[in-house]
Image 1 (cartoon, rainbow, N blue to C red):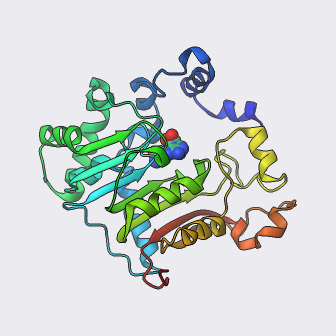
Image 2 (cartoon, rainbow, N blue to C red; image 1 turned 90 degrees about the vertical axis):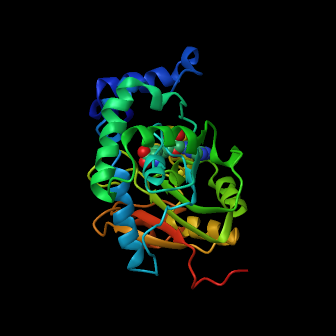
Amino acid sequence: MTRLSYLLTITPRETLRLARQRLPFFKNSRAWTAKELMSSQKFTRGIRFAEFLMRQEAIARRSMPFPAFDFEGKRVVEVGCGPLGGYGPLAIFRGAASFESAEPEWDASVFEEHEIIEKYLRIFHADLVALYGQRMEFGEFHEALRSKMQVHRCGFEAAPIEGPVDIVLSQSVLEHVFPLEQTVAKLAVIQSAETRFLHLVDFGNHYPTADPFDGLYSVPPEEYIRKRGRAINLLRPPDIARMFEEHSISARVIPSRILLHGAQGAKVPPWSEKYDADALRVQLALVAGPDSDVKRT
Ligand SMILES: C[S@@+](CC[C@H](N)C(=O)[O-])C[C@H]1O[C@@H](n2cnc3c(N)ncnc32)[C@H](O)[C@@H]1O
């Protein structure tokens, strides 16, 4: 898919946002306006984080002991929570003592904006009440977000987050981080052997193509990144498994979507040499732990 055909698949507002981000004049302006966020189908549904968690816990549980997360009194960290705080509101609603994240696109005033409060937080709160019970009124919830959520506007590797933490989460972030090595090194510093973690990684091309691997394996990764920009790092599941292992984090990489009909086209080296066919057909995978079956060094 060319850049032009990609631009034709997104809304005019999103096209304008992408254009604005590339202009030097707007370099330090906020990455998202409330209007842009609230016109995105993806961002307006905060409860999607509860849905992700339930699905991912269930998939992890098929491979390893993986009880549902208990957030009560826990220190929770998310890598790249996104412009609306990702798992933060859910973790706080479910009793987390604190929620910390690092997100380059964060704007601390977001939860004070009328449009975000009315169209996002109130609905997210109502959906959380339906799912987990009336744990707190909306006012109390909003106040808890102010006092218990801390998001650093920088890359995770540079964030002043200290351990040990109880829970680490991320949703479609590890594939966007350059270089991922430093982030995994940071995780190794703030995690203890008891820290529970769950990362969802999306190995597709991030374009709305029928085959999510379309265009990925017909050129070497460096060439793909040079042409398309530093949007996805093109690591595959074995690379991520190795990185966690090298940093002594006992993790299990669990495919959560394997597309046997995908990635059928010709593959150039290093794709054809470095990976087996299975690794190239995993579109989604979980990195879950701690994995008690992995020997700690
Ligand atoms: C696909 S978005 C996912 C956002 C959010 N987790 C969600 O599911 O809505 C990827 C996010 O990774 C963030 N990101 C990229 N590099 C990062 C880094 N080094 N540290 C933390 N976040 C990063 C981007 O700013 C972006 O918000």
